[in-house]
Length: 309
Ligand SMILES: C[S@@+](CC[C@H](N)C(=O)[O-])C[C@H]1O[C@@H](n2cnc3c(N)ncnc32)[C@H](O)[C@@H]1O
Image 1 (cartoon, rainbow, N blue to C red):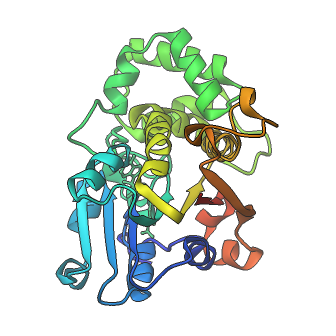
Image 2: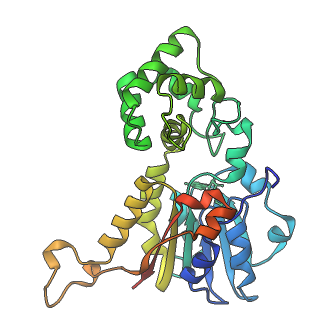
Image 3: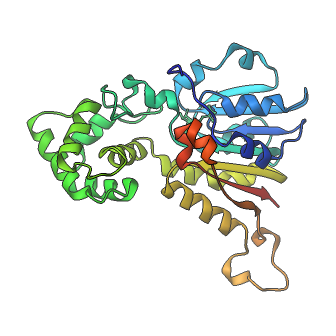
């Protein structure tokens, strides 16, 4: 597969979950290489509309000409945390039929050493989805204090060797700045070698640092707070997450939005603003063994679907 390719995960369940209406208006908040977007567009008539968003300029630059020339399609470079603003600017608040979020990094981001996401390919330690925003992982690691680093590795990476790894990073940077992914991967692997784990010893730490650098959980919290407003009644949301922190946020959000606040539960009449806003559709969806065999990224994908009431 070329380094510019990205196989969309859970494509069938996403299309089913979005319950696509041919003349509907859809938002793909994480365009990537447009796998899901192209499949959604194929199901829309001439009156349908698809607005896609990505914060990564390379994702925007890689969008195929044919897609960009399609009058039903629009691609926005930006953060999905700005969803409501983008939708408001287009006068579509409360008129969106479906929102898809396929969170995390794309295969091209991971595969290209120059983006600095990969512990397997040596490159500059960057990790920004939008290289024009925020600070690089190298700059962050140069400044973060040991206690905070340990906390981040533990919480965002669920890394049980967080203390040992944080200590090793701080001690290594006293000798020389950590500017390369290979350098960081080695410091981590030396500090906490894997003992029969199936994953590389740096997997969890790289995930944790990436989440911080891209403010991923805050982005998710922000967009979740806006989705209900942009959807029309009967509109669907489909969210694919790739680690338990994200999935927990999504699961809780759907659960909370699907019931009245505690003080109104069991009351005969609930003021409209406190009535449930969402209805979960089906249960958590994961990839089949067949999909995982064909696409390893699918192994940790978790899809949740809900409908606007
Ligand atoms: C897993 S990929 C999406 C792949 C896409 N569904 C496809 O089929 O090609 C995630 C994409 O979302 C983008 N992304 C992640 N978080 C984002 C955010 N908060 N705002 C905008 N784009 C984001 C990343 O830059 C990446 O291109």
